[in-house]
Each structure stands twice: as C-alpha cells, then as structure tokens.
Image 1: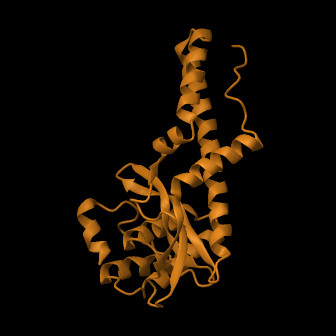
Image 2 (image 1 turned 90 degrees about the vertical axis):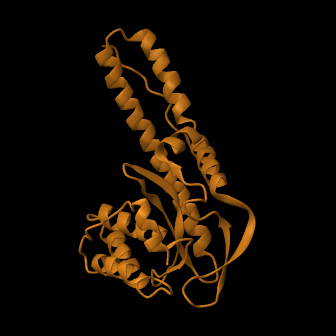
Image 3 (image 1 turned 180 degrees about the vertical axis):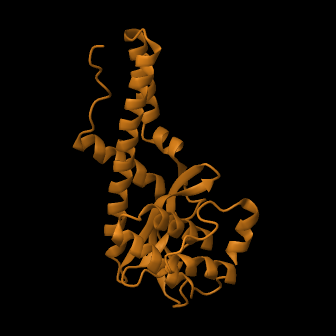
Length: 231
C-alpha cells in the first residue's frame, strides 16, 4: 500500500487559533467577583465559567468545537476514493483519529497553562482545577472544576463539592506515575476535609485519598448520589 498522508500537521499559528477558540468557550464577558468558599470571607475576580453548567465539553463535543470532526470526515472521504480495501481504510482511520486526539489534548494542555498563568498572577495566587472528569457512566467532560490556593492546595472557589471530588478522584487515579500531581491530589483531599459545609461521607472519601487509599467509589457519581455531595 502506498504511504498515506494524514491531515496537515499543526503549526504554531493554527495552535494559537485553536487555543484561543477553547479559551473563548470558557470566558465570561468580563471579570466577576465571587466569594471564596474557604470561610475566609475573601472574594476573587474570575474571568471564566466554572462548574459543569459552565460549558462542560465531552471529548466528542470538544473534537467538533476545534474543527477536528470536519477535518476527520473530509480526510476519510478522500481516502475512500483512494483505498479499495476496507481493512486499509480502517487502519488509516484509526491512525488519523489518534493523531487528532493527540492534537486536541495539546490544545487542552496549552489552555491549562494560560489559565494557570492568569490565576497565579492574582494577589492571592490560585491554581485552576481543569481536567477531563467523569460526567456519565462511560463519558468524560472538560470544564473548570475550581480554584485552589497555590501554597496549600486548599480548594477555595468551586460551584459544587462534587466538582472538587471529581477532579481529586481523576487526578489521584491517573497520576500514579506522576509524583507531583499525585501528591497534589492527596493534599487537595486532605485540605478539602475541613471545608465549611462538607458532609461526613465526603470527608471519609477524601480521607481515603489523602491516605493513598483508593475509595470504593472513585470517579463518576451516580445521579442519585449527587444530592448527597452538595451539602
């Protein structure tokens, strides 16, 4: 089989445009003062939407937002005219989809860096909690789960305790070989145990993570459980 050229490689200009597109998706029209939830009575100026209702993107929705779904479809349409064997077409399709997914994750990584620079520059430096977390039984979504104090990893701004738990669970479970991030997830869990209004079930859940123990229920929260996490 002759060599197959996939979609054009991503250049610096294209990357910049894709990063800007994803940032715009989460941006507010202007800065908004929000009360912190750590009992300090402080406020923070945020310029982005937070919480699941603040623009959550599943991987398929993000794929489409960045234009990769169209690019993928157009590329495959061309290859269908060139490849007569279905096996070859399937192999090419998998390789192209993998390449586009890698590009998508690079865009997310760049956006995370920009968010970190922005919130770390505040009078009280904060770290954004921004990751793909379980939003359905077999589906993950990307959104801003909250902000943490950069020096202590205490979550200080979030919409719902559930968001803190999902970020902590996902980071703890997926960073076993990344000592820094895994330690951050455990510190986050320990700090979260003292948040005002947290319930005892969530305290116990966070204590297990803080101690390096995988809780029985890690990750996706069933709808009937969500109310329990909100107190």
